[in-house]
Length: 312
Image 1 (tube, one colour):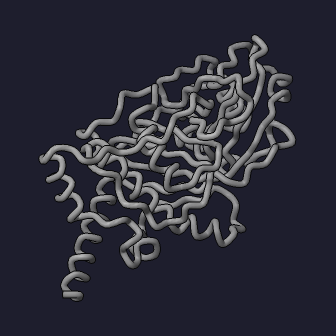
Image 2: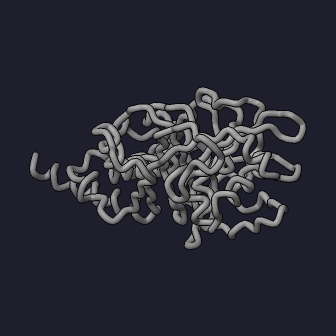
């Protein structure tokens, strides 16, 4: 269910649907998402995973590396202006839902902190360091996805999330690791790759059952479909809001692609499309590159260095 797409070649809608472009999905016989259920970049619910925690207490060399990193690091929200001016210029995109509650507005303003936190979690995991401190952004529960892309062309490197509302602190920690190291379509991300990464955090909201397979808006809604395949098995699949527009698809092409991604192999007819149960939703998305993450880390280190001098 991926922010998928980004950086991949546009998919040809000729009936042959390759999984090599980062949209592939496996179907599920479970109609609804599981608690902590994991969905991949194509969107089908996979097996549940327990929260994945970073390691700590390594040998002396690891402790030295931990201390060096800690000198540069503070939690992303400890900088006095991190969510307002400190993150200006970082990409935050809203897909629909212009009338936001105070809770949602607060959450959106904290999304760059969430991207920063995902980098912190992955960096520490790859270097066998202790987990980062508990972040200060909201810990309200939301469905969420974490996407990793690599290189200047931002090729998909991993994308996994959940439709079940999870507390953001534990949810982002879990899926930052899961999407980077456990996406079955890719080999695990390595230390050598981290400097070329971009992370995207997508917070899902506004779920509504559609009145038909065309009752949604391109570029505004993500869609999740439930259908029965040619063997009578119930399947699900999803695309985030940006997928269709990035691929240049219209609504029908998007539905047909999603059916194929969910494992439907028979001929797709108007009756097939009308039989779909479609849920639409919106999302808020933020992106941050590794270089932006390091820049913020250095700014925070300087800020706390100055604060220490003033206190002394």
